[in-house]
Length: 524
Ligand SMILES: NC(=O)C1=CN([C@@H]2O[C@H](COP(=O)(O)OP(=O)(O)OC[C@H]3O[C@@H](n4cnc5c(N)ncnc54)[C@H](O)[C@@H]3O)[C@@H](O)[C@H]2O)C=CC1
Ligand SMILES: O=C(O)C(=O)COP(=O)(O)O
Image (cartoon, rainbow, N blue to C red; front, top):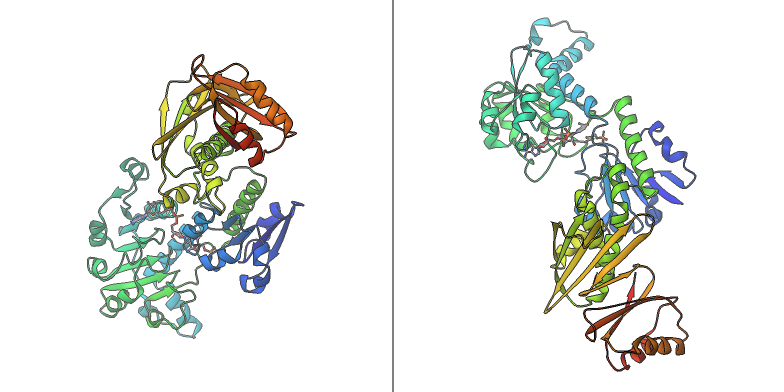
């Protein structure tokens, strides 16, 4: 049974896929109301209200996944989640249209002073001359951040006869042209726009993007809209620009602190606000809740999730193609790590044959997780493998080659430690399974499964019998045995698959046999 804590208001209808699963128990409570049970939840579903801090994650010891029913994950400590191997997913496009429409509604309301006029009429006034506004038609709209929402806002602006100037350092010229907008530098947008709307995520780079210095570069009489995240426009910096009339008006759906309390900006007649309503439509809420609920189900069923913030994105189709290699990668990493039980500096993975055309990033992450697992006490999986490797000073890289050694596909892992290098190669044979085909310089063929024993020895007659005798004397049954050698009479090896793990006494007894150089226990 998986336990899901839903700690913000999430569409009931959207949660249906989770509710109909017999294996899932949903608890809809605020974090503060379930303090004693936090360690029992496998998943946490939130919107923007719950702050998913490192402290909270520390208490949720069983947590495997955080789902954000919406876009912005600035309320989630993604690094802290990644460090713990917790997947973070969001619903990136379910509320795009609602947020774009809300932005447009705010922009129109701002330039036509609709909220102020509304309050006036409700106060039994009829003062038409006090609410003369501006047209949107013919104006220049500066869009900062041209992702999903920014581009939908631009489409609507064009329909209103506005010219759109975009600043987004990650936007390609081709995409901008396709959408009928022109790309400019930030300074150009600031200097030319009659209205500026921001649609970036809140990051280190975008916090305070419109602060004193940049606000001073805007046109006198500019209107500003923030329906993205509080803090992209610096609230304190804005005050003198409103006081001087340089900024003609501001529309804010979001604040640095929500709710904003008795905020000085609220005292300005030309600041209009809504309480973070961009995504608050029946349609958007149903979309985002359904998206995260379905993703959560996939996750619990062991299927890939496609909207993860801290994992390479993987569609079901791609997952099905890489699944076998993903397991092979894990085994290669696991075995190599035990064999090289010394500090290592570098892992080099080479893909050859059919596997080289697949989404290898994910396979490498799996291999890395397999490698790190015997070395770290905490959870390590594809989510945090890269981070854990970095913390431990282990670098890794991928290469591609044509050298398949005669197999349809081949993954080769070379581990570099101090004064020692180890290479293992594996292949996946459809309908047969994973095979290790090269181990420590010797061509061999064995399945990376169960309790394995590696024995390196000199190639002499009678070695197999001697090993069999020792294992028999210790009541250890041999399931399979593979032998290989570099050359007749030279370095040779055996890989045995045993019915049970062997203890140190057995290893010591084997190591006593003449011509045996190394004995290692490997669990796969
Ligand atoms: N008010 C509300 O209820 C809602 C607010 N949002 C917020 O709207 C914002 C945009 O959401 P989406 O369009 O879905 O995200 P998106 O990820 O599709 O687009 C963000 C864009 O910002 C650009 N960007 C990143 N750093 C930048 C920088 N330093 N300068 C300029 N551009 C930069 C990116 O290249 C990207 O094109 C997010 O902050 C999101 O949290 C989203 C939905 C509802
Ligand atoms: O999706 C987003 O980024 C939003 O800002 C929507 O926030 P909400 O889910 O309405 O708290």
